[in-house]
Image (cartoon, rainbow over all chains, first blue to last red):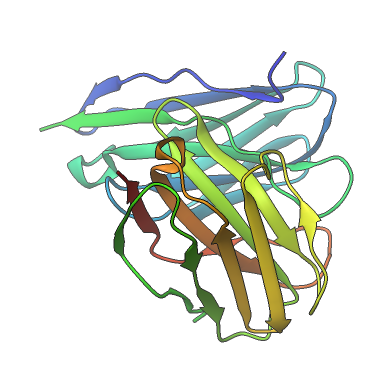
Length: 111
Length: 114
């Protein structure tokens, strides 16, 4: 079993809709997570972090963590074409200060 | 703002060449990392370093080595480049170990080995 799994997509949503990006993880990673956004040809940039069970909101972004189900998600409200990118889920590895990255989900927002 | 600078944006090298990828960060971060990114495989950790002259293997260290002689600089070395090392290489840095230390990435070096 992979430590982090994401649906590769592409996930297509119309402009203004809610985009829901999901990530599942194994017991070998901790329960602190980062979400990174990566535009084509660019390096990843941090958009959200979440460490506690529940929801965390930041502008149009909401991260949700469900430890019982080993599941973390990122919701993007009022999706814009500029949100079109690959979204990487990255938990901290259980031991040490290393991140483990999922392969990423491609999001396409159509105007 | 944290700045992580990778010396080359694009590199083309021949099989068997020794290749150096350089990375410099300006925020006095203790931790530095080298990843490679390939389609469908995501980012995979090659090597990392928590301090000067210290290095640890990541998940895919074979065929690579690293050097950290100064805190701000972390070099990735391909001892004898092979075509399967054609990839995007990303350097990153982060503050000392803490509960959450997000990575700050450089712009990446796209290496092609022919």
